[in-house]
Amino acid sequence: MFLLGMDLTVLNVAVPDLDRDLKPSMAQVQWIVDGYALVLGGIVLTAGALTDRIGRRRAFMIGLTICGTTSALGALAGNPDWLIAARCGMGAGAALLMPATLSIITNLFTDPAPRRRAIALWAATLGLGGMTGPVLGGALVEGFSWRAGFWVNVPIVAVALLLTMLVVPNSGSHRPASRSGERADLPVAMMSACGLLTLVWAVIESPVRGWTSTPVLTGFALATAMLSAFIAHQKRRADHAMLPLPLLRLPGVARGATSLTLLSFAMYGALFVITLYLQGVLGFTPWQAGVRTLPLAAALATGSLAAPRLLARHGERMPIAAGLLLVTVAFAVLTGTRADSGYGHLLLFEVIAGLGAGLVAAAGTESVMGAIPPSHAGLGSAVNDATRQVGASLGVAVQGSVLSTVVTDRLGPMVSAATPTAVLPPLPAARQAFVDGLTATALTAGTVTLTAALAVIPWRSVIPDATTSHEGL
Image (tube, rainbow, N blue to C red):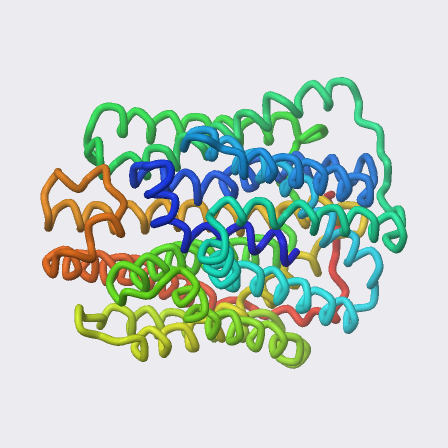
């Protein structure tokens, strides 16, 4: 899980090095960062159902193998498109292995108290990987190059495969699918994945092509049509649905999944922007920029590990609402950033946002998994994972596009295809333009988390120890 979290963000601080080596456009940078989470989120539902069918350890090992192989191909990339394809391949492997991790945990720990602790550790590890990715990426970029961010996965995967064979038990229902169900999996998976891909493409391309341009509007329309068709298909084929809709009606699933989506939208998008800010405006090297994101990781781990006690006493509503409100306060702080603001201002944001994000991550995951019957643990884990990755990919796409739009508006169309760090250092006006973009992205993310917090407050809280009904699945 640490590896998966790290891969989400390890390239964030490598943008200047990538820019010098491969000359990607800003849109291509967003695809390099976003392709991993986008593919993971797009196909993880199918992978979760497959995990329950073929066995969790087997799915875990296949996913690890795909991740390791495509990481090596990414390290050998000679152009931005090749690199984007490798990142997407890593996302496909992660989509298979990620649901297996959480479903293995929930099947090993069936009692509520140890399950809460195990899930909190799972959430903290994933968050630590994501938030320390820039640190590891910075060290690898300065010591070697951006390619080391891919090579580092290969030995880790090899060790993990060996340990999996030694210590991870076989589990999973190994339920054979009917032929009609198997035939339905591929087109349905393509429908959901293509819908998400088209949506993110439209968001990323909007600053360059124009938000009201024909290609962008067509992209939004196609994405809406495909995602609507996906939902309609699930309703018609309830017996063989990739995502059984009754699953979403279970207490805690919709609430937890929505909270995780909006949190990931805010936090992963912000992490993408602030790593560029640390290098382009504050002038830190990749390693120095990565180290200065560590307080965010430490605060997130603290919040995640504090969540089980709050869950046991108050149910899921209180820690999720409190966490979202803390994150909102942090973004309010970030909107006050000026061109002459130092790192201390950003540090305050990181500590507050990290504590809030840790509470939401652990409590939201427990809310989802506590409502899922053991026979659907893989699919339930996939729902949890899909919400995170879809939120993360949209967060990077939307906040990156807001940043790009503001910078282009301030400096003119000549910079529309450039990465922000390529134009910032020599020009004070460019530094101010980037700060204006940063505060605009903070306002966007803060509005999202405040809306989510206000929606959570009226919930009726469910204590995780309570017996949950799974009728209808």
